[in-house]
Image (cartoon, rainbow, N blue to C red; front, side, top):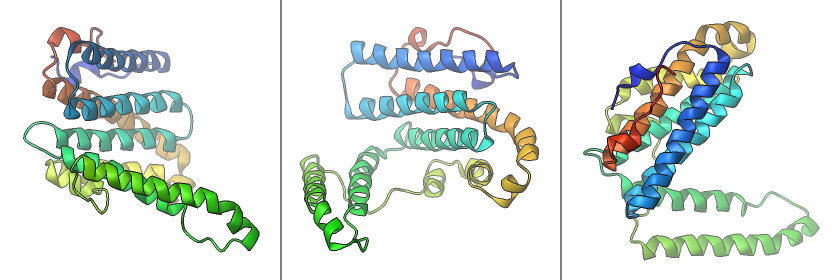
Amino acid sequence: MKKVKDYIKSSSLLERKRGIDKTIYKFSHVIRWYEKNRPRTEKSVALLNLLLSVADYLEVANDSFEKHISVLALAARNLYELMLRISSLTGRHNELENWMAEAITDSIQAIKCGLEDDGSTEIEAGLLVSAKIELGQEIKRFELLRKKHGLPEVKNSMPAGNLAGKVGMQWEHKSLFKLYSKLLHPSSMLVNNKDYCTELFFPIIKVYLQIHALQSYKMICDELELPEKVCQINYQNQ
């Protein structure tokens, strides 16, 4: 398989969008190929779900060109975080159980937000009773699901910084994650100098979001031991 740098170059907006569309299609093709030709395992499910999410955020990036740079920064930061997670599930790392357990923890925490007392009037509170009962039942269902699969009880999702340390990507986190956050949130820099930030940082983010996506793709192909002819991207310099 070729290296990431073999697929990246500066290009026109139309060429860039077409290249990303082809990449998204390729990722979807690999997922379909695996589901048709290989047995389903817990690891393959997790990795292919992650690859599908990579494709989703490439689509977000494709829709963000010529729009507010914070949308592109969101796509790039999420692609970076997906790359971190994929790295934690491949090679010598073994974080699969924790990753699957986080899905249950995240679901329970999100549901509990809907159970918080928000100081509603008695009438409003009465209307919410049935909804809150249903949410409480969902929490019990997730707790039983965790016991059924023997998953560890994870109190909180692992922060990206901690995950970066585990997989040896401290440099990437120290530099790129902070940049993405400055452009994603309404920082003073972005609010007061939007045009300057767009001109200066757009080329950097454009390149790194491609790097994150293609590195993620390569790690998944290698981990699942997919044939090179299946993984090969047959177009040059996107």
